[in-house]
Image 1: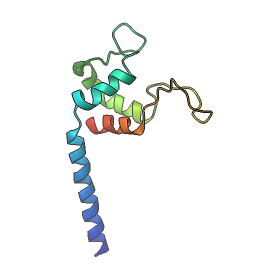
Image 2: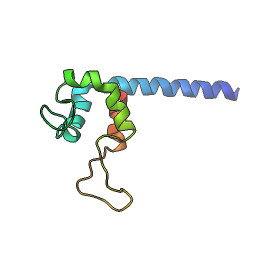
Image 3: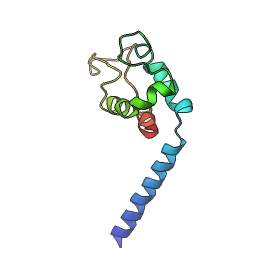
Image 4: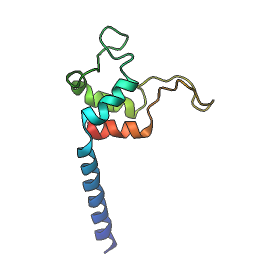
Length: 104
């Protein structure tokens, strides 16, 4: 009987997670993150290899963006976070990473 209850709980969590992901939109949730955290480099003619200024530019890269932010390769931050707090820390908080993951 415990297995049945556990399986129902996992199913409920999956439905809840899918409902949360359905509420995430590019314009409301993801675009502000990309503008605030990525656009300094990811715009036409700058150091980054692609522009991330519009939905049309972002969508083809969605899976790569998800992977890069989940693995914390982007945005780049080379300072040792164990040393102290930095005013210019560019790392994404977990909540922003989860928003991007849910959107993708």
